[in-house]
Image 1 (cartoon, rainbow, N blue to C red):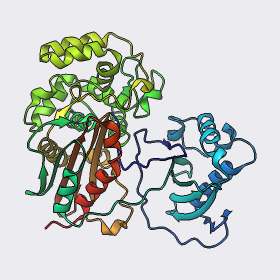
Image 2 (tube, rainbow, N blue to C red; image 1 turned 60 degrees about the vertical axis):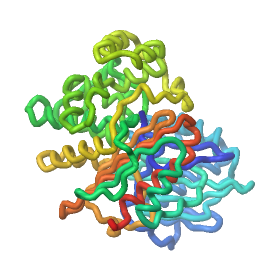
Image 3 (tube, helix red, strand yellow; image 1 turned 45 degrees about the vertical axis):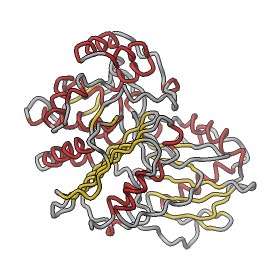
Image 4 (cartoon, helix red, strand yellow; image 1 turned 120 degrees about the vertical axis):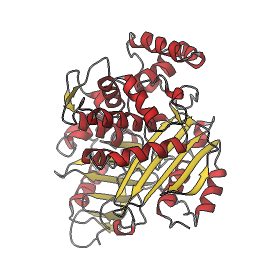
Length: 461
């Protein structure tokens, strides 16, 4: 139950994803164009890093990678944002740097793109290994995202929607997709069949929250508390907070979308009630709400899949009443599994949440209509764009608001986007993919999300 955006694999040098988002493979697109590197600053063979905030930060990280002595927690403690250390401590970061990166070095910076509060630095090692280092800074200049990956050749953009359709058809496994602008369907490859959603299902929890706020039952400013009974597995950050940690409904909702926070999702389901989420599924125009009756929490989903697989088998065969009894039984059990027990190749499409691309399009209709009355909702839905749009400057992108929710489980990789401009033009892009061979599907992640970017940015025919 993790988000997915464009993933960068690494051969020879291990992948390290360290980010305050807590979801898989998320990248934050820079807000400005790269600056021209000139003037003094950190130096490295081939390039000179600029004296911007992110240029200085990149230089500091490079110095730590290349230092004579192994890195220690003290190297990082004053450089990392709190949101970062909530997920990865300074000591853990130092251990990872020592085991994965320093043995390959020393590293040389050969290229650098700078965006003031974000940067991308290309590194090379003596034996020819290449690495891209991406980092972003918070408003205090502290590192909130640090990402290392082997560079890949960019995917060739599609020239039109017919090409997108063909390339989606060529993907392994099943693809359920739709692209709609206003009332015109630009692409459809779904056949009306429901597909597993993974974390995209969290959008239904958002709708249930909005309905509760409209009814006066909940306020965005209400306080929620982390408890051991609601603690789930990653992705997210709230699972690492101690019992009794308090934050607002708005913050939890934003984490649920921006970071795909599973514990936050379950806190909201507990607040609203399972029945309210199931009612939101029906209210959204879902073609068959019974597919998500009952609507399990993320913790319950982990328990069904990996904690108590024998109950998971009963779940597959049970009707709604029997499934509710199974959830009641699971609710009495401790969460004894960890994220290490969630095997990446353990594919099971029968235990998930389900909808069609058309269902999700209808759901986005409801959510975007509600944004007029709830400015908090736009902040939640637009908190993570899911794509980098690296070849575009901000003024090239036609929308003013871009909502995204992704989702992945073994053998499932999904993305759901809704863009809207100030004139009210909207475009919805839904890509739901699944394959029995999880590794084969994962290898297509770059292609899938490149096609999503094309579907959002190409002009309508």
